[in-house]
Image (cartoon, rainbow, N blue to C red; front, side):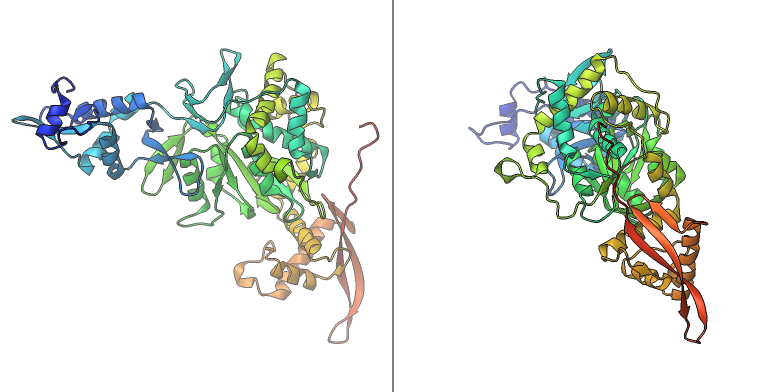
Length: 536
């Protein structure tokens, strides 16, 4: 087609497309389907033009483009719809139809655009997009440590943006930078510190192919509100130059949690967050993503089905108390934060907080991550024999790094307590109740089942076994609370749970009928945090 017009300028003027002296933007000419011109011929020509420009991609069978959502800084993936594709095609090619006198300017119909988008030429011609990341990526290439620079990489399918990293002069400096990120947090156990460090390293280890197996959901918990759970997630994303895609915690029907999650996956940004999740997390869709092999099917309204690479995503959940299935608990990594009274995060130069500082100096923070992984790679990529987690690859690699390069506790110390709690509705209830009692400044107060029922009602704490129809039935609620407490205490009168201790006592009270009966009272107190042994 390009040889049919020796003088494009004159052709444009002859057909009223430009006046004498007007600048002409020369674009390739493409014939629309019709006559001897097949849909595949037009598709091959158009996709060939777009493939060279790296502006359209094929992702899981769908033609996609990168655009910024309103209010967002980084571009996300959008499935291209036929109506929009018509004008997009015109941006990169002049379209013509063939008639008896030769080619004349033409307009693509929406049906034609749909047929072209759905043709096999999209997959054959357009570059494959498997993931987005806003920072240079360390990858294994033929066993060697290789930095993937900005731009599109055909081997991995990654579209990389962001400035080059600045690695520190020594491993000690790299370790200091990474530990400095979490230094102002108070963690429940030394194992939680190790898992916090691993959470900063895991994205590079996974996206770069150093971890071949699955990685867990990161669950950031706190024993009180305003502890910095969401902030922790933000600073980890900032190290990678990223912002999280948030998933709304809806239940059932249109706009359900699974549907919101699917929409987040389609957008393509690597960090997905369920923020301030409360209640029961029971999503087979989410569980299946964590252990999906190969491509993972995603369906969203009005966009049909597409396939994504699940290894290009990391999922985080922030919560003060959630319950989930046994399988989900086994596929999670718990990081437990503790509230620090009257604590304010440190301010840096120009009075910036930590998040702003990381964003301003992101190449330095990312460089620290690269330096640690580079050192581990040079040492032969060793690992421990840690087997206390379902995702062995993730656990053994991070366990070796945190113990040997950071001199921290074993990765999974104390982790089973959190896993067991989120599987048990009674333990989850007791933790939420203890947090609410603390928030109400009622630690040390002897509370009856009636008073606990009122606390639950006002604090919007669900009592296991109390359905919506019985939510106002105080007598039934009191009996359920008594059963839950009996399960927790067993034959003892003291029950310890993470940072709280619950004590049960009996006292004699006089009823309205004048009878004397035994009544259980429960006292919540804060457990004293154990200090590390000297020399530890």
